Length: 245
Image 1 (cartoon, rainbow, N blue to C red):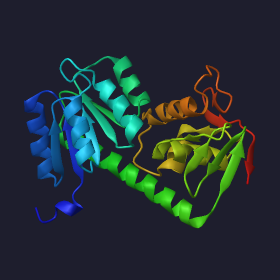
Image 2: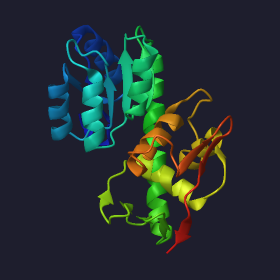
Image 3: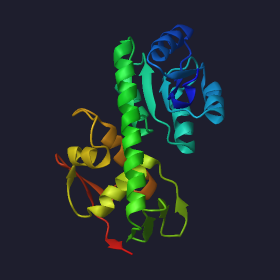
Image 4: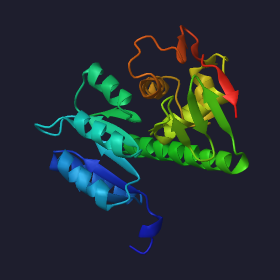
C-alpha cells in the first residue's frame, strides 16, 4: 500500500480465527493496517517487530490468560489496549482496566462501535502526547515532594532513594497535573479535561484505574495512600508537600 507509512497499525490478539477475520476485514475497510496474533507469545513477537498503534485483546486467549499478556505489555510499553472479549465477569473488566487497558467492548459487538472506540482511544493518546510535548517545550519545570523529584521537561521521576521510576505516558501526565494543583480537590471530570480534553464519557472508569496505577508506583506498600487521596463522592487530591525547584 502506498499510504502504509501514514496508516495506524492495529494488532488483533484473539484465539478465534473467525473473530480475527471479522475484525481484520472491518478495520482494513476503514484504512487501518492490521496484524494478527492467536496467543500472547505471538502478540509479543509482533509488538517487538512492528510499531503497533493499538491492540485489541481477548481476555481468554484459549488456555492462556489475556490479563497476563496485558500485564507484560504494560511493563514494557504504553501501547493502547482495548479489551474485546466474551467474558462477562465484572472482576475481569476491572482488573483489565487496573492493568492499563483503555476500554472494554463485550462480544458480540458491532463493527461500527469497535471502529469508533479505536479511533477515540487513538485520539486520546495523540492528544495526550501532543500536550506533553508542548509542555516539555514550554517550560523547564522541576518539582519535589516527600523526597521525590520530578523533571517535567525530561519526563523523569526519581524516588527518595534517588532511583529512577518508570511511569507510562498517562501516569506521568496525571502526576504532572497533580503537581501543578497540589492540595486542590479534582473531580474525575476535572482530571479528564486536564489530561485529555475530549472523547471521554461520564461512565468511563479509566481515571480510577489510572489513579490506582499511579498510587502503586508512588506508594507500592501503602494500603492507605498518603499522596493521592480519595475525596469520597468528589474526586482526588494530591496531599504531598510540593515544591518547585
